[in-house]
Image (cartoon, rainbow, N blue to C red; front, side, top):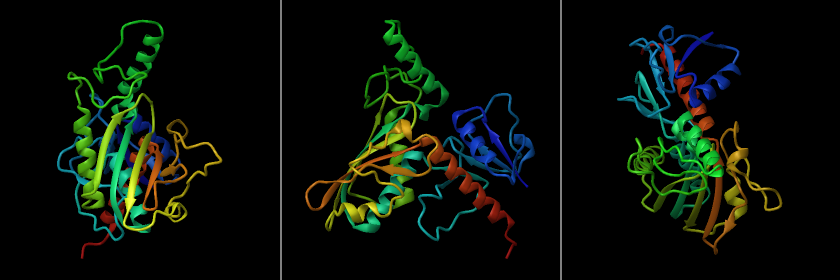
Length: 291
């Protein structure tokens, strides 16, 4: 039986982790101070601290000195550095690295322009509640709560948050770009912009990609688990909840050497699944005999 703790078990990420762990019969969820492995999804002020010798897998990107991991997006035969703190990459960086690694395996990429649409659940429960409150308030002509975003998110697309927001959208964009580069490698032809969308859950990525060779939609679709045909409903962020990986809409050619891609993924599930894979890797590494 593997003993695992969840710090911040009542956060959105914590509940996602708990749901996934409950599907595993060989895992026991124990208190934070009783486990050699802690999944960090945030911290309740009344929660005990982990043992100093425990391995901590950080899903928040806030703990210092963590080794960046994203097992679903890492290259084959990736040499995992040893560390007591593992920092899971931002889910948008993971999604982009997974997507471009598959596309580049079909045809070398020349250039890409990407819009990443951010759901409010990336700001946790407070982000969800603020969008909900704003939507209700607007429909009832009441003042808006703007504690998290310092802007009206409801019914709007935003290129930046208000000046009094605790976190800046451009800082999040910079983190995604940095962690994507660490996972994927140099990509000088990429232009990426993060946009706040008025949606609760799920990433949507709109990507225009040009190639050195022919952009064949049939060949480009092969590395992906699911690419919708033009005859069925497109994948939507509201329908991706609880799904692993990514789903693509029908790939649309733009001339002979470029194509448009529409990609959706569950941001919480993506972070949680990578955290559990990193945790399993840490357990396996710890069990190896010393050479």
